[in-house]
Length: 104
Image 1 (cartoon, rainbow, N blue to C red):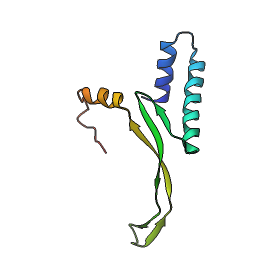
Image 2 (image 1 turned 180 degrees about the vertical axis):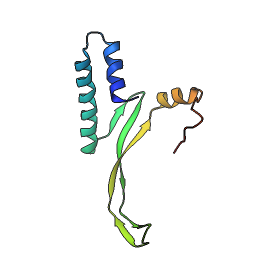
Image 3 (image 1 turned 45 degrees about the vertical axis):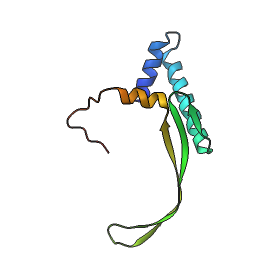
């Protein structure tokens, strides 16, 4: 599902919302979530999951071409942990993936 799919679904489900209003609502929610994560806050949506920031400590990496040691600075990365209801809903559905798809 893409952002535009979400906007379409919202506009269809709530007939009083125009497409422009649905787009503004989705943008506002996503911007608020991104801003909270940037400030280091945790986001919890009951029944769906939580978003938090994980810290990856600095480390010494290697340049694969030259083999030289390269310092990799500390990073903060977003992390999503699904809630129990979402895990159960996804886990109970049969997997129907195309034969040519690959997973990471």
